[in-house]
Image (cartoon, rainbow, N blue to C red):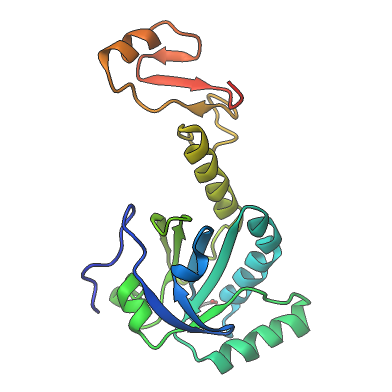
Length: 215
Ligand code: BEZ
């Protein structure tokens, strides 16, 4: 597998032309100004993947409200994607509205989606890309584990708040065991800021401060 130069967090998503169930698309250009989640699955007509597509489609309106698009990918042909999504619509009563890439290996190679120890199919990968085309998160799951789609909703919400308010999110935000739905101030970058934070309300120490979002 060609695994050199796969994009990492903070890198620009590589420019590529892809063949999809919605026709030819250019990435990341066709999603300029929007967040997008590119996710791969091992193969069409497989049980766990079918449950994943159902769950992603159910949340698609919520993602769109958050200016976020979805695009699936596997190394199956367009006609296989179309037959599979037709089956999903007929049997599970959900129409898959987002595009699915029919990859011949080029996209999977560029994004590191094939992990030889896990076989020849694409693993369950997730790339979250921001409106400037920068990769913000990469997640990999094995074939036997379906993804938690509420987590991707949480991640998009968290990124958008973090970017707008210049804050960070604690574990399990917005249900953190210590700080509830408070957010975290980025580390103090100067002695002056560190000194200001000592003893301040919401600061357990100069490097650990939390505050409600509206402040
Ligand atoms: C599934 O989606 O059910 C699946 C796909 C590949 C390997 C094992 C399970």
